[in-house]
Image (tube, rainbow, N blue to C red; front, top):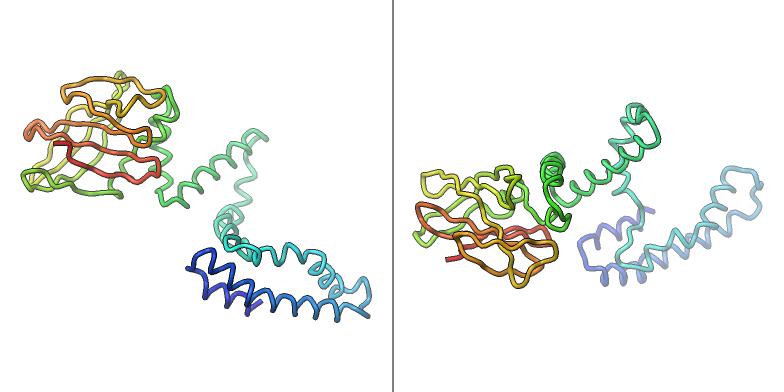
Length: 257
């Protein structure tokens, strides 16, 4: 086993093709020798002996044991999963008070959502708060999932150079106006802060499903289905900014003129 993990440590950051080749040429021959050793030493042991049972179990599960050598994507163990469920195991006594099977299912769903957010690099509380605040006020889930939260905006891009050369930073996002499709944004450029008026959401390059087009003081722009633009006007600069939320969750700020 130590030899197998030594091989895995060497190819950990390699591409799947390189991992597959290394496992076939280095790991698989060692595993074949291990199987021969198991088959040779299990002979003569009492059937009920713990060692015989261990050898028999390894031989019966052999196809699963070598499964990772047949792919460059699979891992030889599930240690990554074990690490992520460790907090649940440590608090198992507390998690027994779900109240009902329905409560247990709800708790499991919440663990799944927060764990997925953490694995994708999002702060779980910020993501959950943002989702719960926005979800009731949108008619289409596709719209909701494309809206960036403050933590993601800060992480994606902190500043944008304006035509004047002064950098603009997003300080934060306000709650959406429940009566309109839009958002308020706090920005800073130079040494001054400002509250940008309602960011008018407009439809781009044909209307994505579920969107209602609106024409504001900024005029109408166009966008693809894979990105949503929110156009705002800085009163002092009369400069339009587009806050872009892409499907791959990467965010950016760009000048629109």
